[in-house]
Length: 388
Image (cartoon, rainbow, N blue to C red; front, top):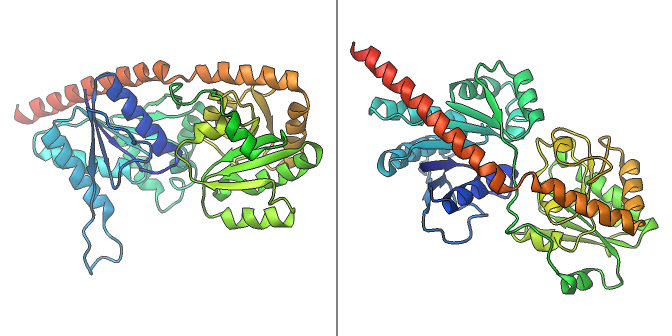
């Protein structure tokens, strides 16, 4: 198949999954075309059948903001026409699903049918999409997609309760590439971070309010009093200053390191003892899954789709949102019990194997073929009716 993938090329979960999906499909022999405004951050190596098409916006004094959506639609039309794509897969509803609908209509006027699959990732539904200024467009775009997927059962249900959805939503969970995310020996790195054998806690996110990053600091402040430990914070975002201020107010700056955005997060997870994810909402919890693949138990909130990934009392523990005392208590319990910690590490890895990319890729391939067949049949039927 020739597959077009439209995504945000950033460190966010939707962009990461879209990129890893494209690479995985290319490794299976499909031709994959990424269409976005810059090269995706996870697209670092050369692949003979992976192509990148950059979207450039017109700079013109009339526009206060460059019309990216128009430029993206034009680029989609161009790539579909000249690369002869079989299907477009757009990740994150806003604005990609709406733009794909526009591109589909333009192509239809040229006698070309392009099936469109929209994958919902979370905040495109729960936060941005639910806003009244976006909701009508999001609802329309989902209903006009040839196929729709959601990354968790919880996100599917929330989408159905938020919008009047007429089309079926297929749940295809996020996945993990075990060629990359696995436990490796990084003892030299661990000694540099924790020279006196301190336990290492890790948090990875985009430091937004919904991630409740202030809770990470609060949890660590309690844990650090009971267990000698270090906290590694990976990522960046609007709450970075708040976190730094909290670090200083707790007098913990010597034990907390801000590592910024990292591409090789698996090397940091390889030295971690626990992963903390106290989010107010998570459609799935990809960062937690990546940690579990590296045999790191997860201490998390019980929000959104996290319970579909983290099993309470087996792969880690879950607490109510904002219950930092519960999370800290659970951290201490595991860190002080080496036997239980080792057991949870094995359980975390076993649970992560359920989401192996090699298990998920065939589901996407089959879904693509199903949508292509249905869409082409509808297109032929419509054309036949038009000319009869």
